[in-house]
Every structure is written in C-alpha cells, then in structure tokens.
Amino acid sequence: MGQPTVYIETYGCQMNVSDSELMLGKLASAGYTPVDGPEGADVILVNTCAIRDHAEQRVIGRLGELKRHMRKGSVMGVTGCMAQRLGPQLLEKAKHVSLVIGPDGYRALPQLVESARHGERAILTSFDLEEHYEDFTPRRFDRVKAWIPVQRGCDYRCTYCIVPTTRGSERSRRLDDVVRETAGVVAEGMSEVVLLGQTVNSYNDGTHDFADLLRAVGSVDGIRRVRYTSPHPNDFSERVIQAMAEVPTVCEHVHLPMQSGSSRMLKRMLRRYTREGYLQCVERIRAAIPNVSLTTDIIVGFPGETDEEFEETLSAVREVGFMDAFTFIFSPRDGTPATRLPAELSVPAEVAGERLQRLVETVRSATRERNMTLLGTRHEVLVEREAKRGEAMLMSRTRDFKTVLVPGDATMLGQYLTVEITGTTGSTFTGSVVRERQPLPMAG
Figure 1 (tube, helix red, strand yellow):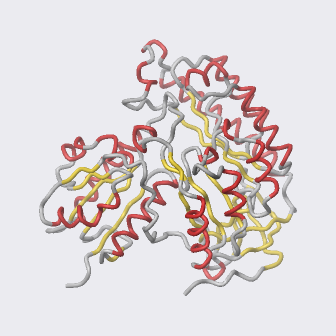
Figure 2: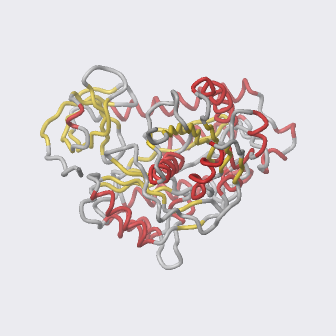
Figure 3: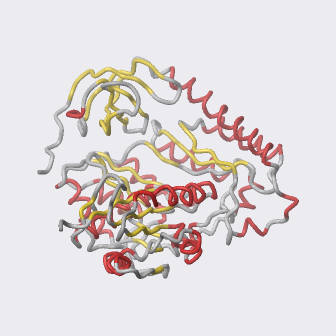
C-alpha cells in the first residue's frame, strides 16, 4: 500500500489559508500525501469560517456533497472557526464527520486522524494561548507570495464579531521567529510576504511592536514586498506609520476596516473609534504616504441603523475615496453581544439589501472615475497567477494592490514586470508589458 492521501478544502480568510498550509505540512511530515481533489482521499478536511451565517451554511451543504467522495476507511474532519464554535453539534449534524478540531488543536492532528481511521470520533476545541506552531513546516499553496501569521486571536470584542470566541485572546509571535520564517520564504524562491493577524498592527511580542516588525521583516535580504492584513484604526501609532513610510519594501496599500461612517453606529458596534477618529487616521496615513491606496470593510443593516446613519456611511466612503470595499449585510452570530440587542432594532432584510446595493454603487462609481485617470500610466507588477477568464492572460498586482491583467503564460509567474495601463473595467485593469525584469531565482 502507498502512503495515505489527504485533501484540505479551505473557506474564509487568509488566516484560514495559512492554517491549512500548516495542517497540510504537519500531515505531510507524518507520511500523508497531499492531493488536489477529494475523490477517494483517505482524509478529507474542511477548514471553515464562522464570520457569517452564510459561510457556515455553505460548509454544511458542502459536507454533504463531499460524502460521496468517501470510500471505506476514509475520514472526514471539520477544522477551524466553525469547528471551534459548534463543536459536538457538527458530529450530530453530519454523522459521517469523525473529527472536529479548532484553530489551536492542529498539533494533535496526525494522532487524531489515525484514531479516526480506526473508528474513533474526536473533538478538540480547547484554546492554547501559547500555540504558534513554530516547529511546523507549512506546505504552501502559493509559489509567488507567502502568508505569515504573526498574531492569533483578538482582544477588541466588537459586538458583531465571533472571532474572540473562535480564536481566543490576542497573542503575538516572537519577532525573531517571524524573521526566520521570512528568510525561509526567500529561500523557497518567493519575494512577497503578507503578515497576518486579526488586528495585526496591535502586534507586540513583549519587546517589539508592529513598527519593529515591519522594519525587521522589510529588511530581510531578498524580500521585495511586505503587506499585512487586517489592521485596526486605533493601532496606527506614529511609530507604525513612520515605519510604513520609511521601509521601502512595505507596499503602499492599507486595508483599513471602517465598518460604518456613523459614530453612533460605531459605538453600538464597540469599534472604539468615532467617524472623526477614523478620518483622522486616514489623514495621518496619507500625510506620510501620499500615494497610498485604501481598501475597507463595511457592514450595512446593523441593528438600529437609520437612514441618516447609513447616509453618513455613504458620505464617509465618498470622502475617503477607497480603492475598493468588501461590503456585507449584518449577520447575527450566536454568542455575540449584537444578538442581545432589542429585536425592534432589527433592520428589515429588504432595507438592508437596498442599502447594500447603494453602497456598492457608491464605491464602484468613485473607483471607476479614479481608475480612468490611470490609463497610460506605468507600474511595477508582480505576476501572481493565471487569470480565471480569458486565454493566455495573467493576473498581476501593483504595489498598491491594483489588479492588472497582462498577456503571457505560466512561465512568467513570479516575475516583476513594468506594465502600461491600457484599459479598465472599473475595478480591474488591463496592461501591456513595457519592460520585463529578471525573476528572482526559484528554489529547487
């Protein structure tokens, strides 16, 4: 018999992608062979998100679909935030699931999988506030950029957010460990890293803060681009903004979650800043980095949101001029304080839906207008992957996170190119290659 096979399917944020890479690396070191599809895999793991109800319902449906790929002796497990939140309920809802493992339980994964292959069902959802998986070797999905977790958990306790329940309290990795992993990424042939944390700019390992981390990672020999996600507006100290401006490898893009443009709504959300405070944060960042691009997250239909408060969000969007925004209708999550707000504060679904449409159009119209001014300009891009649509097209990104489609083939992945912007759909760009730069040497 050959080595047993494992397939991992990932839902949710970049932190989940990083966790899947850790799990895959751990199982590979224990003798499992990773495969690209669930058909006949000995172990099928679904790494889940719990941030919205829709994401959980998708996973429940997917577990049923995946059952048809199982054969005698196959094991199915649910990992991640949804596993942490629901625990034994998942074993009741899906009888073919044998394992339920939260984000702090991956160290025991090989033993639990082996037990499940012998008929035992198991749940591991305890928190370990010392766990950073430092001795794990991730099996990375991406060969162009690397996701590097620097912080786990969150202490902010926003009233709508399930993350503190599913990932526990905030804790940061040692700076030296992050630098070591970054150097390893370069040795694998990658030159861009994305530092991950629930509120990444509140990073503090007891000796170093996020400004120190940006300077240290940005100075690693061979690194050309440093990104991070997601920060909190309250944690942009002058030290952090100065580091962003002064370290050449730190990219000119900040994903700055706003959630609402109304101070009253922000207070109800327990975001710990006001509309004015958010706009001041934007001003401070732009004063230090004039060419920075800003993206954001916005929730509509939060309990109690009035028409006037929604209009405040639209005006804030217009005032900031975001490059893009991830927009959502409020989704109540069991166990969060928002579910205890009076029922009469609920916003009707049709009202929330109409607000979402207006918000999306407000973001897009401003983006289209700004993007038209970029036609004919030149930018450095990193080719990330083959485009999902169109023949012989590649998806690349500028330093400030704009998406540019360029002609080419898979041999160009990982290359830095200079492109001239030739067109825009309003959200993405097309470009022509002006001058190719030599790719960094690839490992292996």
